[in-house]
Length: 337
Image 1 (cartoon, rainbow, N blue to C red):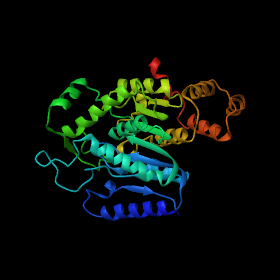
Image 2: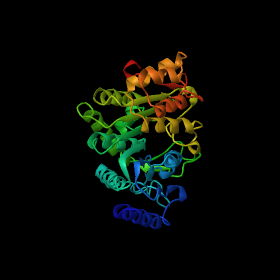
Image 3: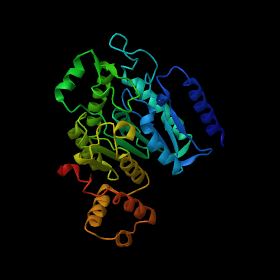
Image 4: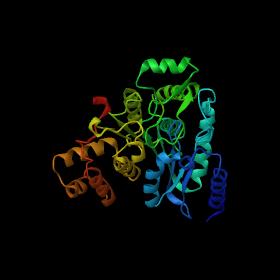
């Protein structure tokens, strides 16, 4: 191990020790899946609002097994033990700069563990990942945005977020797999709504790192129109970006990363992410391949004609089989949605 990697390993161990007590539960601890050497890619994953690193454990393990280093840090103010309620709300930051400083620090740490950095996030974690992809595209090799929060599905609720300082409890606070906080003060979410608005403006003129946007028709929490609008702006300047929207029949809701959180199709999310991380194809090229496979052409025929390498062929074979065909996965152009 080089000195920088050893220093990083020591730092990660310090975090592990500091999180041995004072957290809400074991699920809230940071996850670090690190090989004893630098890897070709290192993945930095950002969990959702009021949740914790457990959300990215299945995907993290899958990419670690593929030979990548994986960092899933607990975000500021999250996962802390306490009797949190309307009188004593959880200590979540109300300044977006706290989160931005956090992700930039972890980006620096990730760079010591791999040649290229892949960043990903769910919900508000996806919002932060989108911000990184637009602000630091030269340092980000790929960005995985899992249903990023750019606004809620209800415009009235967005207006209330901007003006009400009240405490709010999740409607599904007792749902299976909810190891994080059951509620929060609205100002802690308001900062992400404002960041989402900023990102939509930035995407009009900035070139982003290649982005995978994953959403679901079954997601009733966020504004999918805004997600499509963001992708349409990104794809104009970054053609190696992909967009997917799971069909409503799969019942994949906002918490889409794990079976623990009621996504019975956890493997679909992992397959999508793994294929994108390992591919250099543009969105148009992938659409063409998907359509030809749907029409019955063989992978070998397409591989020869498009001069794809064997790895890309294997990825698409996995993508289009085992319940991941275009009938289950809406691989459509958002501009036509």
